[in-house]
Image (cartoon, rainbow over all chains, first blue to last red; front, side, top):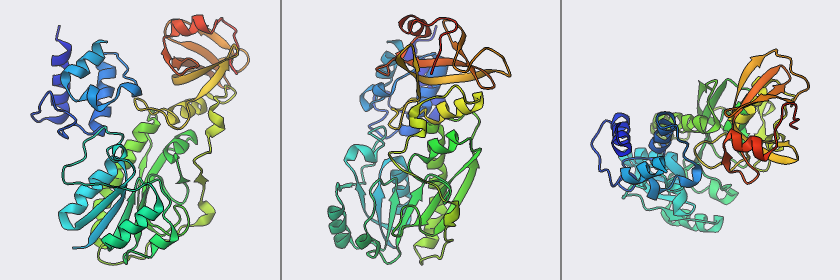
Length: 73
Length: 307
């Protein structure tokens, strides 16, 4: 089974079709608010996991690792 | 090249600022506290952008006198612009409105449009005059509302369409003050900030489609709901409803609001013209709960009545 982090990387790759720094998604400006909402929608479908508004923070979404932690929680 | 000032917040203000910067002198961005400019810090403010924080109108006026912009764009701006500001920029002030004027003026119009069962929505760029959303229309774009679109989806669509339309109007409005089209005030509905649709109460005496529109029109998932969460009362406790679907049309099941059946995934409730299934609900503290938790804590039984 694909690890959560790898799965998230593959989702972001499909969304943005360009290279990115896994540890600097928001602060670098790579993902904007629209991308995040799209990503959360895809996570809800693929992982059957609803991310709540209170968890949508720059800290939680700046790295693939933190997003995976949120999904696996 | 003109001197342009933006007063606004969020992604749309940031994106329009990027467009302005390509051809013009962006003299500043006046915003509410920094976090809001980036949509509550969901997206990064570009390095070149140095927002001017202005919490009150007097501060804005002094900023304007100093920067002397030729034109001002008010984009996702929640402050009313006072009369003395209106005369400062020679090419006027232009506002973005995320609804089709004159029919949907005011606030929370994406929600109101869905709740009212509209199948079409739109965005409008218009001059600012002394009223609210009442100046001459410069450009408007209309587009369909998807059957299952929620409030956030529609807001995002408005932002995308608004940015595209901004690129189209920018060359013209920076050359001269265009005439625009005056608004037919007889068509106007203006929604106030304090105005809540049915006070947020879901009525099960509505038809299924109307209940569905009400709930999706107040769904901002996954963002926080700062308008009102749809709710009802079940066994004397408030129950918040995030998601539902219409499952049966023209099904008899007793009085409206009666729980017909339930399991671990849904609670089926009778409405005026059939049955709906509640799929995602929240407790009195607005915390998400599973259906089995809900059944237990609200003591749900077949025949329980929701009001």
